[in-house]
Image (cartoon, rainbow, N blue to C red):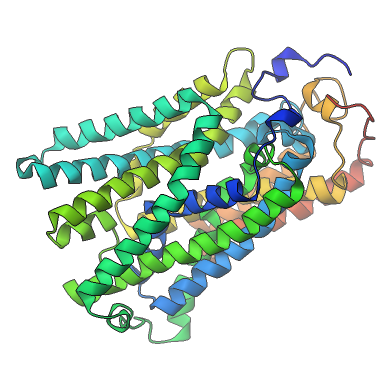
Length: 469
């Protein structure tokens, strides 16, 4: 085994040793329950009601979208469990040891946006709790910003304590959030009178064409919601005890948790339309509308736990590794987490959550066009070009199987650029807007197919060395 290149490796990027592969079925199930049971998932579901769907249409859209994204999730998870490598190291195989930085940065920037969004939600929840205790705080912008920055800082403290603290936080948070979600559903049911009343809001669409006009971009948004994790899931599966532990844990955890919690969001939002005459998609605003201080205080505590859980697990682990990959000798996991936090502030998360349209059709669909092509290239390279066999030693060397042209694979870059361009062109060219509605799918298949064609036309896949790092 040769010595790894220090410019491509540090303690956080090296393959996970066997003694640290301790995550089992429960850990991955808990991971997904803790990441699904939070405010942006609730808003994802509630926004479908706000856009005119009834509860059955909304549940069907959520379930289908999550079953679709589960496929690339499990495919990309395989390499993490098999080789113990994180996402930014894994993508060196298709993109090259230097070219991988571009793909990693695309994922990292999106995660920074999510970090800011979750921090803003947590800050507004704290501000709402203060208003329950101290009514004079209502409308005070300085207090709101202080709450936001305080919650943002709390996230960075957890990051500083490392990956093990994340696993312990999620093991506690998953069952706690399940209980809180059930309590919220029962409480609103009591207010509405019955589940029949809660779910009585009819579809606002008068024709199939009207429904499909909202359904397809909404489905893309459902896939885009977890398109981030579909890329960097190796950051978590590298700690798995076995392939079966991570695959069964995810196959159960993701769809079940999403359907259960989105049902809460859909039911409660439908009930708000009955109780208040219009759908309230933000749960913090909804809780305040009932004017029940004790309920509001308990619910907002649950919101804080959920938001902290998902923000650390989904929005810090990956970008911290991605930034570390840029300059491993200087940027550690902790330093990468700090960079994530500050970029999250710079992306103005309060604007991304301003309306359902800004959240779904702007943020979710938009970035899915960036990440779909990366996912397509990753899956195509690992399964169709390399048949799941990697030379791990070469992933940590500038001269090796993944050196390509000065560390960059031009075929992967061409596939990525074309995939992103076709996926997002509809944003600017109205006659092609249908491509934007399917941004993740268009990017995934365009980039994946083109990558395979270019790689097979150029040369056979590099031989895999028997010895690994």
